[in-house]
Image (cartoon, rainbow, N blue to C red; front, side):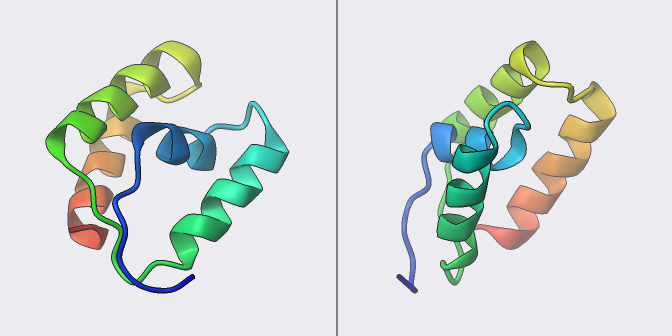
Amino acid sequence: MTGQAFVDTNIWFYALSAQNEAKRIAANSLIDSLIMPMINDQVVRELCTNLLKKSSFDESGIMSLVQALYLDCR
């Protein structure tokens, strides 16, 4: 699949989380196949909350991630 698609919070979370390697690999493959993934502010908020609560991300990592998302996504 190549092109544009909206990527939901769970896909981003799986791509960034080390909890399940198979899901991480699949999510990253999906995201990498897209020209410019689409997100919205709700997805960014949900992703940040989930990464802080359920993953090893800290606030500085979250800030870097948000900047990267806005540069690389539509």
